[in-house]
Length: 194
Image (tube, rainbow, N blue to C red):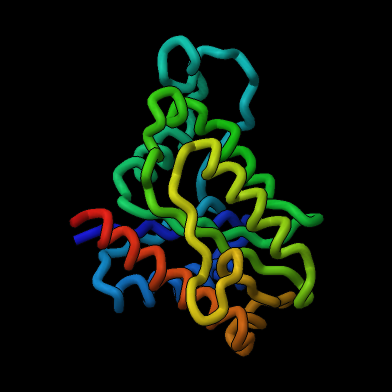
């Protein structure tokens, strides 16, 4: 059975992004995958200091929660990364993780891993696509396989709208694109497993 990990890049526990990642994971389960939810709000993560030690050793010289998160990413067969929109981009927490994941790229440990992205903005056109593109760019550099939310909508991924916590629960397009993304990620991961 394939394992799909949902990563919540929000600094907030239980917010709108987490809700949509959970919806995507529910759809992945319905498509036959095991799932795991990983949040970044509760992780100690220091920014990269450009020491280049990881380039030589394959391991980061900073001792915090990032190496454990990277290990869980490698263990998963597929990953869905979600972020709220912060000025048209990912959160600082997610960006720290991306910058610190250089050890994964050393041996391309995310190569051929099925991945998707979702984002939540305060308005319908509130930077979701640019945030998803930032996640996609990161995953392409890691040599992962990207999927969107699939037929019938065929967007970049899950795109939700919400300001106050709970808004996404009534955002039908956000819920639908997130469900479709979770299903699509699980389907492709299962096909590749065969």
